[in-house]
Image (cartoon, rainbow, N blue to C red; front, side, top):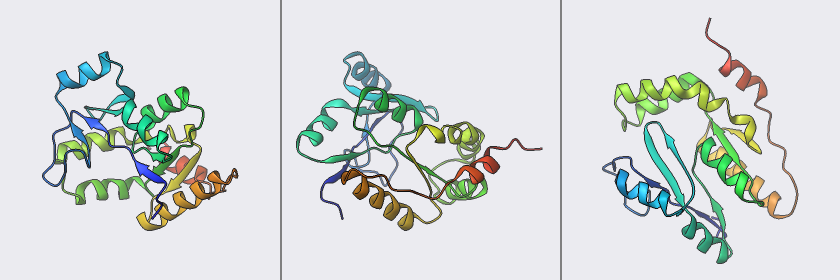
Length: 181
């Protein structure tokens, strides 16, 4: 456990799932509430992802940083791009599946999305994956424990002012992004 690393909790318009806890997994709001947060400039970043809106509240992050924490965001490429554009001291990680088949298996197995939703997400997967090169580190999530360990190792090196070399994913990504023939 890393006592200096905390996760931000996103705000979303997505319906709350049965196993999710308000304020722990997400802050669930209506479209109108989300609009008001945008108008009042309360988000550090916000985006529409898979037909739902997500955002990271600025004051939450500011408070964590002021208390000496490093903040971990669980956001997509749009949010990462926005945060990197507005903040100087940001390191980004892109977690990718080992294959598109495995991504589809994971989405289906977790049982949180309808078949139609899984199909929609898979139809968007290539586009989402194509943004991998905007990130500082790209890590294949073939085993969640190993992926988390690798991210933590990178963070430890970064805190020392060094860069950690992770295995290249260019070959795998080229194969995944290749148009179907």
